[in-house]
Amino acid sequence: MVFRRVLIATAALSPLLSIFAEGNVRLIGLVMMFASHAVVFYALLARNCRALVSVVRRFEAHGPELWLTLDDGPDPEHTADLAHELAQRGVRATFFWIASELNRCPGLVREVEALGHSVQNHTLTHPKWSFWLLTGQQLNAEIAGATNWLSAEGALAVRYFRAPAGMANLGLARVLGETGLIPVGWSVSAMDGVTCDPIKNAQRICSRSRPGSILVLHEGKSDRSGRKRSQETILATVDKLLQEGYRFVIPEPERLR
Ligand SMILES: [Zn+2]
Image (cartoon, protein in one colour):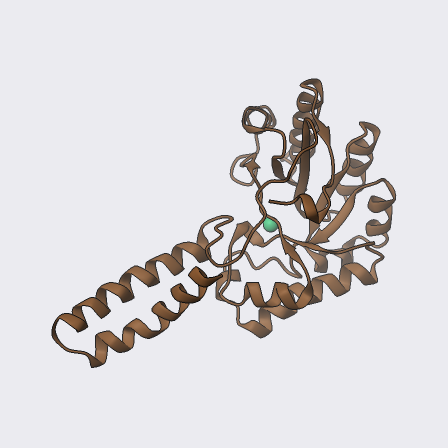
């Protein structure tokens, strides 16, 4: 918290030093300005960076436990089927959903949570290019608006938030504090948002998983022939990890790190 305040204050005040001071002090001001702005820029765009927001990246495991998180749903064609397939395997997952997409999926929150899964906040409209630039008001509309929508659709307890692409925003810590949400990142990504190859994606995530890892995969992608590539990836990953003896849990906030 202290580091965060010093960083933001330096980024805000160092330009004044570089404009109004003279000689060596002006040079120091310039160096401070470039260095602090570079760090802020990195902290806003780097995935799950903790310089501006205390993002959770793992949890305290009781044995071989993993947390499966699935981003970018809901999808009217894919989600219900996937939720049932996971439940049949005894797997509980957390779905981070884009709330405005619920327009296309009436009743889905209740259906998915009735299977033992959890539905959480992945913003109202998923502004993945501009999230780091949103004003405080826009940020509040994205985050509080999504929670309200999910709750109105019957979500049991919206308490976790995942930012689009794991980005930050200068107002994010404040909005999360006001809305009581915990920012959740991940330990291991399948990189299935970049290339969707079920075998390679599953191998990547399985080789990097450890007890207490938070796994992230994405919902909803099909190829041109209609094959549900995302679902294949998720189920291939889950099946391999179950074979290796892992269990899938949704950890309580006290276990988050
Ligand atoms: Zn996303």
